[in-house]
Length: 170
Image (cartoon, rainbow, N blue to C red; front, side):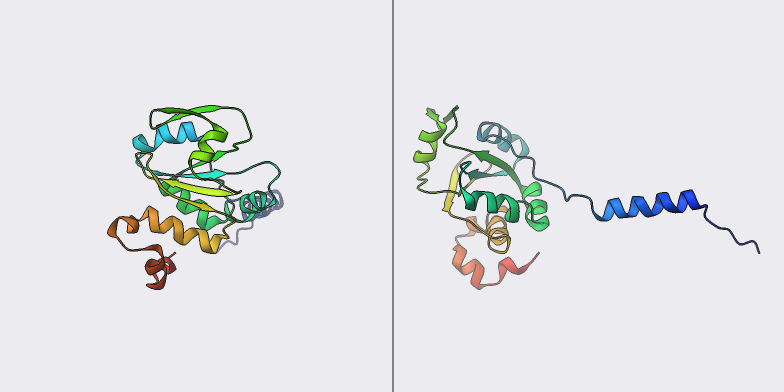
């Protein structure tokens, strides 16, 4: 029986390829504008997560770094939601429910009083909730599942959903 050996250059290539694969950046969210999200949601039959942030907001940056880079959050959001970002301090306009708004006016219409604020819309662009403040991945993922799996439509409150352990499934 012949013994076969891998050539040194091939072995080196395989080691480098494995190292690169192990340290590759995780899949990232493909952020859209809220205008793009509202146009795409009905076609893609996905909910919308709107991250309302400002450039100076430290908690917004932390949510970007911790929550929106978490592999479980990214995977679930990518499958059921259209991720959108909006800075109400920037210029721009949009039409929502037949009314034209600047980004700042739209933020106010959503009831935003601080940053970050996360707004969840259904597939038709109807606002389901607006949640102020930073959310860690362990808190954010169950919220996504509550909406993404349609639990909110059953009449079950989010608190009861959490008490019932529905959020424990990954």
